[in-house]
Amino acid sequence: MRQSSLVVVANRLPLDDSAAPDGACEWRRSPGGLASALHAILQQTPATWVGWAGGVGAAPTLSDIGSLRLRPMALSEEELRGYYEGFANSTLWPLYHDAVEPPVFHRGWWETYSDVNRRFAECAAEVVEPGGVLWVQDYHLQLVPDLLRRLRPDVLIGFFLHVPFPPPELFMQLPRRNELLRGMLGADLVGFQRPQAAHNVSQLAVKLLGARVTANDQITLDGRTVRTGAFPVSIDVAEMQSLSARPDVRDRAQQLRADLGRPRQVLLSVDRLDYTKGIEHRLTAYSELLHEGRVKVRDTVMVQVVVPSRERVENYRVLRDRIEGEVGRINGEYGRVGEPAIHYLNQPFDRADLAALYQTADVMVVTPLRDGMNLVAKEYVAARADSSGALVLSEFTGCAAELEDAFLVNPHDVDGLKETLLRAMEADPVDLARRMAAMRAHLSSHDIVAWARAYLKTLDRTGRVAARLRREPPPQGTQIQTSRS
Image (cartoon, rainbow, N blue to C red; front, side):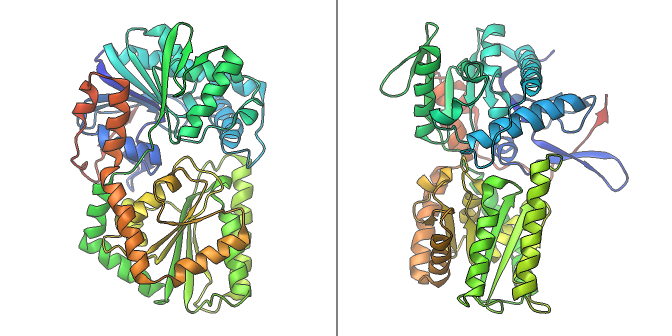
């Protein structure tokens, strides 16, 4: 079996399963934030990626993509329900997002989550070279670092949490809190989006595990030191800039504006279907602005893109129905023939279409109730080559600390959200250009490669792994044929 010096372990492979017109199975880049981010780096860096291939049943046989080897993990129907839909997304996800929705605790889910984490750890332990680096990603695999510590004490183990980590009083609600905390602390370096998350973990390590903590949140547990730190994740800035400069994308943006009736203002939101994204609060604010006559349908149009997500989970199906019902009510009350108040699209978009949408929008509205980072906001900034456009951004996103020149808002405050939307729509173009230029300057030196290099350099102090990371954008539209085993 071939081994790699760098192995990424994540819930999903950086690919999506989709059927070609002739029925053949093809694999493409996934639209997910984590997959897109790491894929941009690892496609040209020698590494192995261990992850679920999507679907239920036997794992497919996958060819390598350049220097990236793929090790697909299989999930049974029972494992999908218990590990993924259950413990990961009905227990941990809501709790880690400030319990926006009540978390559900189910003992059977925990057993399945533990079993799947063990299988991921065993697979990763097989494919990493002696003295190599294992980089475990996110809340789905929170037990894996400690399992790997026992299986492969010779390697460096990193863990990065892409979502927020909750305050201690919320984390304490988890029935298996000690095991989850010890699981992530099996890593040599635990990375977070924001410094507060690292502080939350260090407090819990003292309280629950009897660890010792230094002033900079370094944790001593079981006779070894676990380093923690904030490493805000970013995007492939060069790729988005390149897409936005393409003539076909620019033409598509102009056509979109024409299709929308050439309004004075286009407001755009692009969200994965999730109750943390603040979609309903946003619709309420926009509806009230229409009712008060402060926004006119003929002058302004909102485009709300909702990418389908976790459609098998009941809470998400209910949320989709509520959103679609509210959009229908608003359009029925304020729209006109050929002039809807809100253009609602419940579908995924490819990268080029997203770049065109970003260029069409005068105001990008990114208002989650809680978000670890939010890469859509960064993509919008990267797409605005002429430094035009306004970004309305929730204070409760990780990127709010970086994009300070956005129009920051508390999305729970509907009146404040209304006023902020109007401020952004009515802002002086000179002020908008200043804000956008500052945000673009920040992103230019804080792209996805800088993020990965900073994390891996901290994990591997020799700098060998970080030095391999290249800045060349990955080739677009890479596809490989697969066969089911």
